[in-house]
Image 1 (cartoon, rainbow, N blue to C red):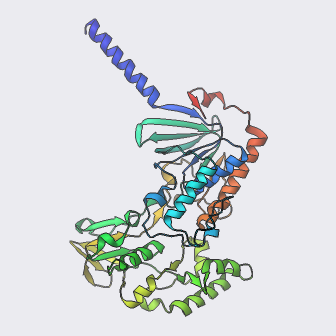
Image 2 (image 1 turned 180 degrees about the horizontal axis):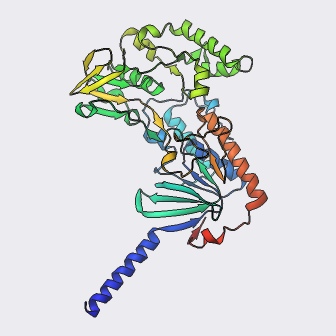
Image 3 (image 1 turned 90 degrees about the vertical axis):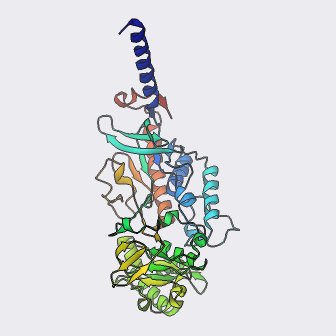
Length: 429
């Protein structure tokens, strides 16, 4: 190779190394890193702000509360009264209805972020987080805009996992799924029944989402099939004008869980009738006990059960297999179907990126039951994994922020990171 070619190669190599160096950078965070900008992450960030603790919030999407903004259907409202869903130190506006709409809740969260000056770093997806025992700090690697070549490594003393219980959709495998040929979407992609007019639609799953999607389809002149694969508790949303959740909370002040469960089931029987005769078998365990032990939320009826009773929604059993444009059920019946909507739930994604096995289970939930699942070892915290909705997330957030704030004030305000981890960092927060 001549001198000109050698010089060109050296220049090209130097340029590539220069680009790689600045594409992958290390950042020291003088405070905690909060992973997730949903309600839980925002609540933690607001608490840290009040404690005077610096922090950063990492969010893989391009907005706060991406589940609410991009993965929910149009008619969605909060299923519980607003007083049970507000975040710490920020009540809902007085003119909001008892059950705020999706848009109202999003506006509330945006106002919350503005009030506490929370500015997440959007489009930054955490690829891994691991505790470095050598220097006693967390190493969090992210990809900007999903590009693994644009990597940032954050070094921090504390990490708050706030990615939530519903980070990833669950898509079950059915025999013959690939043969079906029709439209198949998850409920997180569903917006309105308008586009399903004139179609034969099956909704798979009978949780709150499956029930409400079925109702929405009915309201757009579709008569859907509702595939019920397991037992389910259906409760009236209100009793004599009062939220059944609020009623249950009041009763629990005086009675045991088992007694309150019996009262709730008696009210459900009186107001809804026998759900078993319509293919909706109740679990043997009461609704509150089931929620406490397995995290399964009872369905609050918004009018779906009336549609089932009238025949506008047809309950069908579990699926045996799919074929071209058809579905065979376990009872031997075969029906023609155009579209399938999978209301089959969500899961935590924590096991895919957090390199830790002592605090979280393999399913991505804290091993310690509520209310003790918010703090692990070595600066690891969690918020929003209580299976108790927004109120549980708020309780977690308050505990996390106060605990970190206490340590910050006592020990770490002027502390610098150990040289072993800090020497490679080229910027700071």
